Length: 68
Image: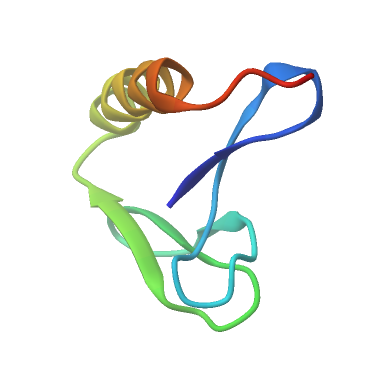
């Protein structure tokens, strides 16, 4: 669900179609696939989302192969 893109940026992506996530309008903070609409994450607040995604980004970077 996470990929390291150009420049070392981590992109939250759908595991089904690999399209990037986008914000969705909702009562809660929601990320969905920009292609198929699959929910990729839901949080009560933006602060919770930011904390979880920051932790997720670090894990992805730790486990990714460095670019050549």
